[in-house]
Image (cartoon, rainbow, N blue to C red; front, side):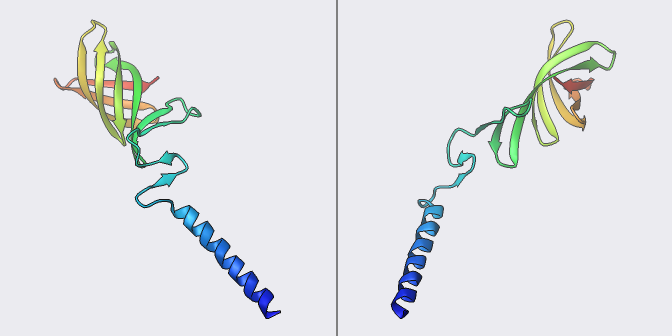
Length: 127
């Protein structure tokens, strides 16, 4: 009887140590459900969402959006911007085809406010 208990205990201990060593992986290697985080390619794709591409590390992603909107005089503009958290930067093109660099801030769901180098403001939304 003691041999059976001892044998079961040793088998359980061996199984437990195998499971623990498999979870640890090799030294210096970090893996998540999204793959190897030490990889140089940090592009994440999630096709469940409209804006499926983002770059960066977990909790520090940058998103790229196409935007449309109007300047302070009601003229149409369009552009492309990169957002990280609440703020970002990008380029907009006015109705005359003039390209301007802008700094942006989220002001609502899908809504952005931008300011160019000359102090002009733009109200935009993501497409």
